Image (cartoon, rainbow, N blue to C red; front, side, top):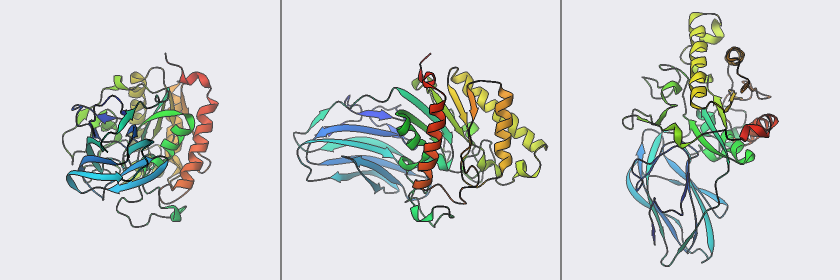
Length: 349
């Protein structure tokens, strides 16, 4: 039994490219398609588009999580399960990684005589995250390296499901759009993403397709998703190649960054007039002047729905990426802070 991507029983979440509804393209981490079915086997057909690293997709079948490695390119059909009991099953098929790759989804293949069932409704609460590799869950599964530099890897440890951002969404019982890209800084020509002509969040935030190595950019329609809470976790990659905020806080480059950061927040406020906006970085080691700059901009905004949040180990927690236990603690703290803002932040205007 073939299940096409436009089958009404499938449920999608995330900033997904639906220009071709029969072959949607997954771009951002935490994006998923969910299905409830009765059948004894399960296959999926996808086409990978790789930029760098080995590419993995994640899935949770009946509560058990696993991953599959994709070929670098080309259309492929992958068996996810065989010999299942002929009872009801729940599948969450999701993008583990950022735009180091994208993939096109061609549909599922179930055993003959299989049945589909409606999926429970998505959460009413909605959050959106603008972040970098930490928000994407990069290297999160390298749990033997808590508090340590990253091990050598080729993408196998990256898992958005264990990012603090998706953990926070689950704890808040909220849907998430995770606009997160490893290496992204706020500004162009800084950070680590898409070297040597670095692409910043100022050119990513309003796109559905944004990686110049994978094709032309494409605008996102913000009317498709209206978050109640927006988390802006950008700033720590802007120290590369020059940590000007640490070296000269009142210098021209530092002042320019603060002005551009404020302009970015104003753009978000224009898009989301009623959203609560939480400004933060992460526990990944970085100079405290970046958080000082964010705090200054937050105060200058004079917007009672814009808040600056610091983790207990903000900027001093680890020289490497955030592992699962560290992400768990971050999400606990962030969830508690957002909850403290009151139930009214989740009300639609």
